Image (tube, rainbow, N blue to C red; front, side, top):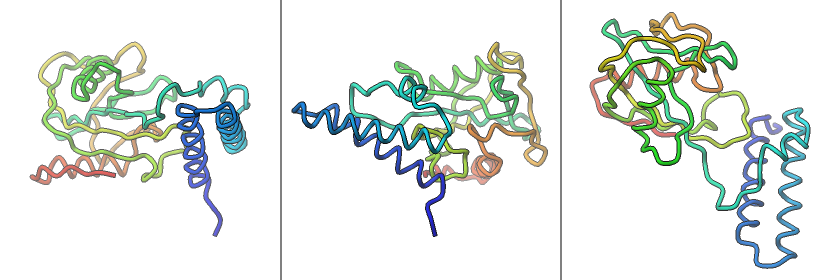
Length: 209
């Protein structure tokens, strides 16, 4: 059985990370030249797999100046009194997701997720607990160049008014069995159902991977 596109993408990411780690710690011109070549090969493979122009990828993935690490996506799982789930509609693809985005340097994870809720939905919230840490590789998201961990927090609304942010097309509550079309790069139906179960099962279990 051959490698799936997802398997190939994971291997390419690992190859690129190894090359960039080597470039950070290279102690000779020879080593730097070899790792630069390996990095270029990884971009060529990624270009072939994603049907993207190599020049675009080369500009998009600027050379690492430090040890390459996983990117962190923080997300909020919010329920109203009717046990409906708060979702925001992405302007990029016109589909829905739980509020969240990249964690900014200088923000704690909880500060980052509360800021995302406010910016995307207009609501002020409080973090109650961590629900899950998803490794995107372990879930059937569409292929993506980055290697990403998703931190999902259970949050409760404390104020504000439901009003989508400037970079979103909408914000609303939905029943877990009547979800709109989801932005699957950001959240999956299976994950929302899982988070709903974690929130309502009466335990403080934190799911990981």
